[in-house]
Image 1 (tube, rainbow, N blue to C red):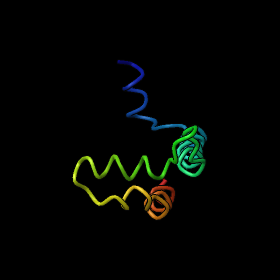
Image 2 (image 1 turned 120 degrees about the vertical axis):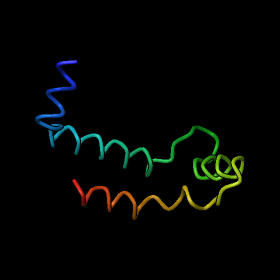
Image 3 (image 1 turned 120 degrees about the horizontal axis):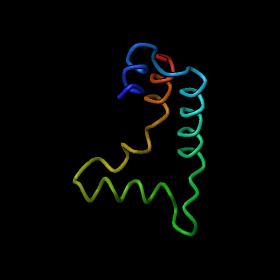
Image 4 (image 1 turned 60 degrees about the vertical axis):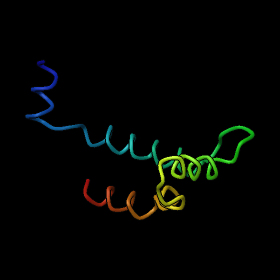
Amino acid sequence: MDTLKKLAEEGFDSDAVEASMNTIEFSLRENNTGSFPRRLSLMFQSIIYDMDPFEPLKYTEPLKALKATW
């Protein structure tokens, strides 16, 4: 509980947040799923839930906006 209290008071370390954002961005851009195309995998996940299959491919702008807020 002390850790959560400290985070609430002091916030997250900016270097750790930046490193996490870089990791997420790299994994989105890397698209390495072995023998199955990553983008198709993302599209199929959306189709299963009756969502726009192209929406998961539009991560560039939301990621840029998230980086701008930090």
